[in-house]
Amino acid sequence: MIRHTRAAAVFAFALLVALPSAAATAKEMYATAAARAKGLHDDDAPSVKEYRSAAAAFEAVVRRHPTTGYADNALLEAAALSREAYERFGDEQDRTGTLRLLNWLLKEYPSSPLLAKARREVKRCEASPEKAAVPCTSRWRRQIRRAERLERA
Image (cartoon, rainbow, N blue to C red; front, side):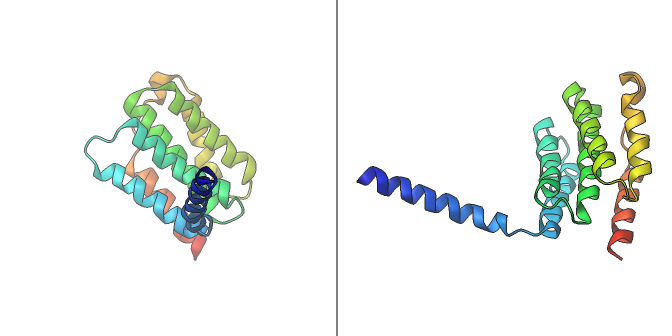
């Protein structure tokens, strides 16, 4: 009896914790992911785990809200973070993740205004690792933000 009561209590708690995140809008999820990414750039020495976690937060926006205007932007942001992680830490997993996210954007969002940028980044990532290891620039991030503003207008 106590075992069932305890299991029910754990289930109820898990449900209560999950409900607010289930109700999160694409805008809220995107803002949360963007804040996490900004925190990475404010930090002096973020870890590869922090980069991957921030990229996963953007990917969660796409998985939860694939038809919103935030989805293509979230994929490009996630790819940028994966790319940064690759450049900073050199783990091939991050380079592969960058390509996966960019190809997802190209395949699923063919009318996105971010396609040209995504295509250029795919070519850059598919180049030899020595050539690909050019740091992500703040200019790229500004271009992403500009496209986001135009999309919302």
